[in-house]
Image 1 (spheres, rainbow, N blue to C red):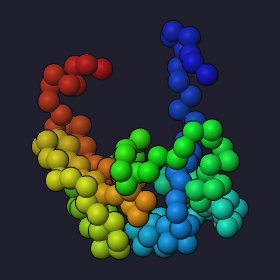
Image 2: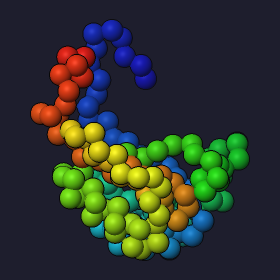
Image 3: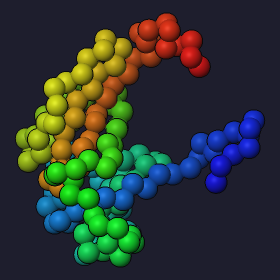
Image 4: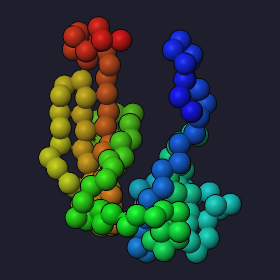
Length: 150
């Protein structure tokens, strides 16, 4: 799937993040309260497809079903971290609203807010311990030394 030098990346690619969950109904309820919707075509007793954007989807799979795709053990995300999911937001206020909502419906904030002036981020853990970082970037305020790296 790699690209030859000079070949452009396919920006039409969709991403499907697969996460194991203990209780699918509680997980759907949690993320519904945060404003996410689900694709009913890919939802049954074993899994659901949470729609993040036109090209980003999170497949939430009950642990026994998730295990059918892997040979390794499932990481206990309450004890170990395997991945951080980063989602951009339209503003600092939207970052705060999302994390405050997550905490209000049973999630927990996993670290202090990070404010770098041009970038603002907060994180929460869902009920299964998966870490979601919600961030806002104002690239017009990005430090010049970072802009010149392009």
